[in-house]
Image (cartoon, rainbow, N blue to C red; front, side, top):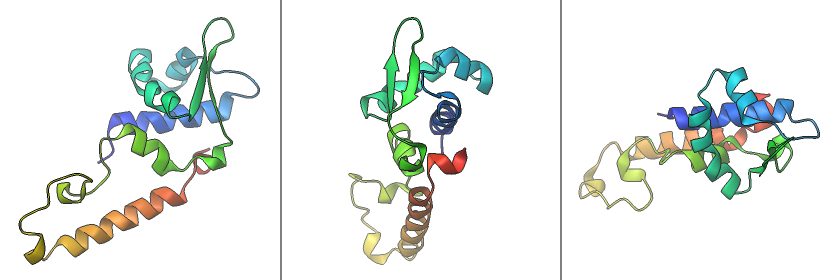
Length: 131
């Protein structure tokens, strides 16, 4: 399940893509348009800026803007930065200890298939698609 953090990250990125023009978009404006808490949005921004998806400017005329064109942002990239994990079951999470039942597990192929379908879908959609 995608958390509010991931869902709000998509809303922030889409809002900025739609409104930035040639300038920076103040987060208070995004919060107001989206009906979200500014304080919570400010907690979502660091991984997006640290990883180069957004750039910020403080002071008058400041705010945030995209660093690339909307069609260059895969939805999977945004969610990977904001979600702890996207796998449908814990045994598929990278770095998780290998399940002792994996060899006889009758459902692992199903979970691997679901994981692949979800990841392929998220890779196939861009920020432009949300606009």
